[in-house]
Image 1 (cartoon, one colour):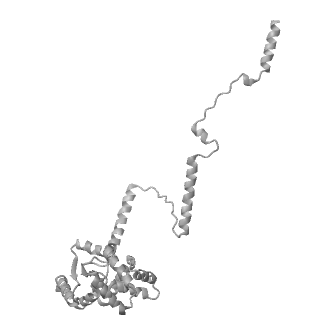
Image 2 (cartoon, one colour):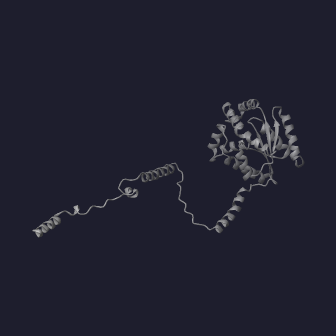
Image 3 (tube, helix red, strand yellow):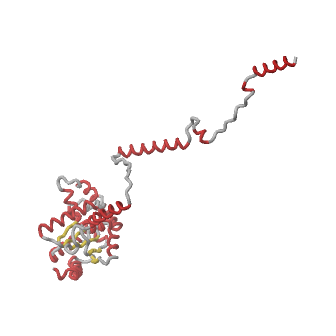
Length: 299
């Protein structure tokens, strides 16, 4: 009987399912394991969005004609090679800063003043009595806009009509070419540059690439008098900027951008101021006094 009972118990155990005899171990998920569950994380979506915006930005720039950025992968350079490279670059950079002409050989006088101050008239007198070549930045620009085939013609015309300042690269190139031409033809070394610079960056760039100036001749004149002169001149000049709208714009540009140039040169003690609120002959008498002191011995 006892044996029968044991056999029955053994059969019951054999028939019981294994799941009831072995407990399944519990599984614990870490944060990193959850990221692999199938749903993309926020960081991954942000990265994809950023790549999309970058690609769109590059596409827009390429449609606007801008050059696409290129990835740079410079090779590692030793400290010795970097020093050699810097030493080689220094002479090239210094050469770029050397002006086209030496201030010991070429004399430049900047002639500044508001529109209608009488700069052109006085420059012609100085040209006659002191052997200067008179270069008017405005005249050079007007000639260039009328020159057949000029790639700057329409651009210059727009700036002059609106009373704005023409990009300095154009003006400086025209002035340097005119100086070279005068030096080749007549061995000229003295130049009156009338109506330039009209901004301080123009002055700095001209002195960097062409030649440092000797002095600034500033014709001081009230706007009321200049306005009367320009309107009178406009009756016969045919200039597109001799009208009331353009004149007012030119006055504003001179006050805001050109007068600070005079103030900057005054700090260098390079400005000779002459009042133009008097007859032309009296103005020139004052000009001669300054020029006799500066250039009298070399007349």
